[in-house]
Image 1: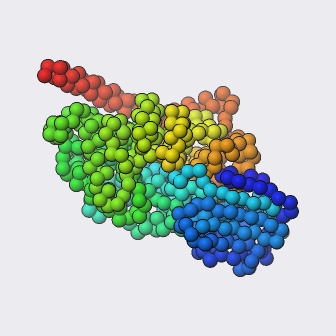
Image 2: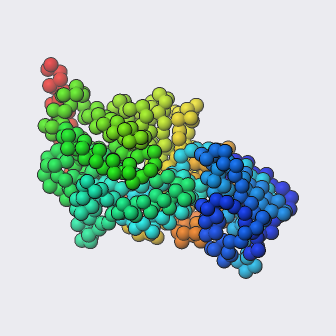
Image 3: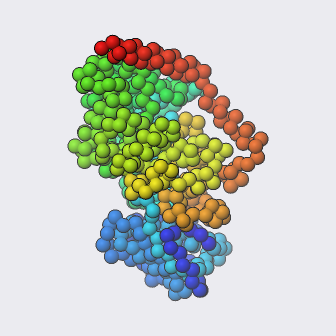
Length: 532
């Protein structure tokens, strides 16, 4: 059998250990006990004390993720330098048991072996957008549970955007009183919304911590803020009331970078985020910030002149810098999407999350070679909301995070993260179908060395892992036949159906108008500069 993610070193030996309902466990660590007990319950077996399977740790390195698992004919020993390492060893043990578990006899023949294991990357994440479509805490917890089975250690939670605001902020109550609800979604005439209270956030953070997962919140600025501007119009450039967006895509209503109220707002939200989330990281977005309104805004243009900034990209760099400085005062490290580095002036401690291609690719390579730490979340193939004909299971598995152009700089790649945006995902069945098993493929790249990867072996082992995830969480993975669609007619049909979601003539017209206005303004500015 093969473990997913594939261990660093696996040595098969002669003989086997018989696991049954009488098998006893020895462990002093509550989180490990709870994890194994929950698994045994899904097998119809209760936890029993004993010395058949022993978990031991000397506690010499609490940050260590390594573990050793030895299966002998007379028992199993899992050892590590930390409880975290034991927890990961427990996830491997679950797969070893389940691979040969007989439902009738409640027994499993586990082959004798020795596993010495540790991850390739320290950052192994999954991002869940609960803004475009809101999902309750129970669903959030299920996905945290599921990713823990795959030894992922980061849950990136996208909590603010144009289409809604999803977290309680005491200083700005209208964010949830008004900003958490939109009138409809793409003309469906159905109000949609919801938000998480601070108590619910605390509950999720603790739930994740028990599974050695860090929750990193995202407050996207200065773009993707229409819900915030709708709640507090004075934060926008025009100060005109706008509704919480009922459409998807990129919007021009962003925070005004020329008003002090915007900076105060950002600080107020970040302070409460820092209080709610103990993670050393906070994500502040920075992507797709359309500067259309900044070009026309007297306050933004005045700010640029005062600071001697050449363009709006540098104004965004300044805006970001102020947020980074404030987070530093709260002992937090900033993560941004890669567009934040386009100006070339991003503060050196900021971690870039790399998702886009084109010219951005060149900028990211430049940043990595200059020592910038990055998280790899390439749109193709790590965006899980896109259908399988676009981002296949095989493509997700075979993508190499240390991509062309940064060879020799692997030390600056913190790890990988797969993202799930929910514009077109409004129910848990579709959510499960899109996430699994592609996230399982990404988890293998996050954990094991590329020399250990073998797609066919991975595919042949998926059934066992899919069963573990479904038994534990109820999340059912997409059938393998749907994950690598080869029939051209079927591929075309799936893509046409998905493509219809993306056609919004009103949004296209709005974007074209904005692009023309920006082009005109750039031309005027160029003439003015040439005349000086």
